Each structure stands twice: as structure tokens, then as C-alpha cells.
Image 1 (tube, helix red, strand yellow):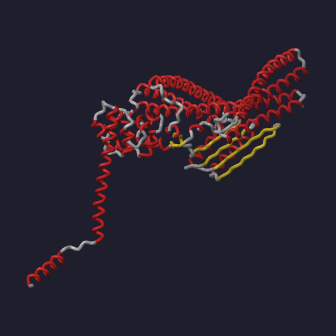
Image 2 (tube, helix red, strand yellow; image 1 turned 180 degrees about the horizontal axis):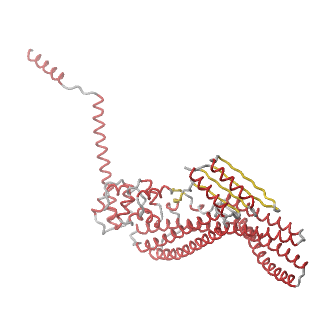
Length: 536
């Protein structure tokens, strides 16, 4: 009995000595064990996935070494599948980078990654220091700009990338700024033909009237001189009107400008046409020699203004068309890069075609730069009232446009060579198929911190200096304001209008006043419009 009691006491002591286990701790221990089991399962699944992806790639690319693929164990399944679309040469180059670079680049779509891997090591090291968003933006650039941007310092590169934005677009509706019916386009085209024929006929009439006018002067036929002078002026006015009608019809059928811009241009053209119609009406009633001289002066002034405006309208339409062609070419390059990626994945060698595609991209980039030059000169021509400067800027703008067009034609010839090369290499290629890459577009953000200036008419050097001083001051102070000064001369009477929206500094008010007063001796219509705003 005593022995039993001793055993019971000993058992109680042992139970008391045992550490107490909290139920919650028991639960955590079970969860930890479960997590370890799940983690082990995930690791095993990942290992199986890696082994399978590696096996498939090695089967397709027999010269690829297993150790190259081993460098990519750090990647997730989707990243691994993405880079396995690369050929052996590109995979070897990627495997030679550090783990951080590999991880960052693996997030870039293979079709864009191919272009980055094609850069030299120094450029790759630089661009992989960008954050992922900037790197993604850079990878979506065409080959020419990708290479050009990667040559910049990292600070300059970041600044340039900040000016760009990625947009998702609908390729089928990309290039139409406005939708026009076939009937509207056809009607506008018919109006163009009518105006063209009228202009040809009127030019013949002008030549005939000049001969008759010379004959009347030679025979000292005063009535004949008046009659043919008037007819010449009326015919000249009609010729200018039909010249404007031709441009208007081109605006009406253009799908490269938006509706608001088209309406503004048409409104401006109609205003000029009406001005000429009014001058024609005045000319009909004039019988005196002085009256004819006065109306001749007005028509000549109207033609001078119209000629300048016409050059601007035409350059705008031409440049919009060039811009559309460049955008189409950018998207076409994306399609071709995607096609080459697809073909390369089927183990075809596309290096030679890629080199030609790079040349195509460089031609398009040169055309893009020439277009920017032309647009810049055109904007400058609208911001000055000095006639000689306007003419020079128009010539330079036109020249840059023409150079851009030549480069685009050269690019088209290269494109033909690329298409032939792809078809010869892989006849089953589907060029019509829409690819995801074509739904992405890189666009330059519009500058907001600037002053827009438009001058219609001609200024003296002193007046232009005042305009330039005002613009410079508005930029310096980042003033938000609209300033419009309108000087209209009608029958030798001057009407001056000034309108200011926003708050100007005292110095700016003085400059505006000085500019307005300086227009009091103007001989022709002048309109100055300055829009300063949306500074960051």
C-alpha cells in the first residue's frame, strides 16, 4: 500500500513538473508545420515547372547549354516562359547579367526585350538602373529612339522619358482625327476640282486683261484703261477666292485634323473670302482713277495676307499628313518586330532582317525630326510680323517638310525589302493579323509651360521688338493671361481694339499700351493674339 501511495505521489510530481502547453501555441505549431508543408509543395511544383520549361527549351534549341537556363531559376513561371521566347544568342547575353537585371528585364514582354538585349552591355547596364515603369516605357519605343535614348546620361534619359506617355489605342481608329462620310469627302473633292478649273480659267483671263490694259495704255484710251483695270482687279479677286476655295476643300476632306481645328480653319478662310467679296462689290461701283488705285491697293494687301495664310494652311495640312504617315510607320514597326519575334521563336534566323528593320526605324526617326523642324518653323512664322522673317521661315518649314517626305519614301523602299525578306523566310506569315503590341502607342506629352503667339498682318521692327519683350516677360513671370490687339483699317479709318483677360504686372501693362499705341500709324489690318497660361 505504501508502495502504491509512493508511486501516486511520484506521478503527481511528474505531472506538476511538466510544462503547461497553451492551446493557442498548439494551434500555431500545427499551422507552422502546415506552412512548411505547403512551402515544400510550392518549391517542388516550381522545380517541376522549371524542369519542364528547361526541357522544352533544350529540345527546341539543341546548342543551348543547360547552365545558361540555370541562371533563370530566380524567375517566376510567367517570367520564365516570357524569356524562353528568346533565341539562344539573346538568352546567353541575358544570362550574363546580374540577378537584379535579369529579374527586372524578365518583366518586359519578349518582343520588346529582344530590342533591349540587342543593345551593348554599357547601355543595358544604364537602362536597367531605371525604375520598372520608366524601363517599360523605354522598351515600347521604336528601335531608333531606343538606341538614341540609351546613349543619354541617366538624368537626361529620365527627363526625356518623363515627356512620353504610354497609350492604349484601337489600331483601326487610330489615324482618323475625325470621321467623314464618303459623301462629304466626295463633295469636297468635287469642289476642289471646280475651284481648280476656275483658277486655271481665271489665270488665262488675267493674262488677257493685262494685254488689253497695255494696249489701252499704249493708245491712251482712258476709258479702256479704267475698264480693263477694273476687270483685272475683279478677276484677280476671283482668282484669290478660288485659291482659298481649293484650300478650304482640302480642309473639308482631311481626316488628319480634328473637327474643332477644321472648323476654325474654315471659319478663317471664309472670313478672307468674304473680305474679297466685299472688295469686289466696292470695285463694281468705282469709276474714278483714284478709286481704282485705292481698291487695287486693298486687293493687293488682301492677297499679301492671303498668300501668307495660305502657306500656313497648306503646310499644316501637309504636315498633318506626314505626321499620320510617321505614326502608321511606328505602329508598322511594332507589327514587324512582333512578326520577327514569332518567326524567331520557331527557330528561324532573323538577324539580317532585324538589321534592315533598324535602318527603317532610323529613316522614320529622321523623318520625325524633320517634321518637328518644319512644325517649329511654322509656329515661329505665326509669331512674327516681320514680312522678310515670315517668308524665310515659310521657306525653311516647307524645305523641312519636303525632306521628311523624301525620308519616308526611302523608308517605304526599305519596308518593301523587309516584307520580301520575311515572306521568303516564312511564307505562312500573316501580316493582316492584329497583334497586342499594335494596341500600344508612345506619345509625347504636350508642353504646357509656354506662351502661344499668333500675328496676322505685318509689323515694323520696333513693334515686333515690343511683342518679343512682352512674350519674354510673360514667360519669366509665368503669367496666365490672354491678350488680343486688333487694328482694322477701313477706308483710311483706323479702329483699335484691345482685350485683356487675366492679371498683368505693371510692366506688362506698359508693354501692351506701348504696342497698342505703336499700331496707330499702321497702314494695313493687324491682329496680335497672345495666350499665356497653364504654367507648371
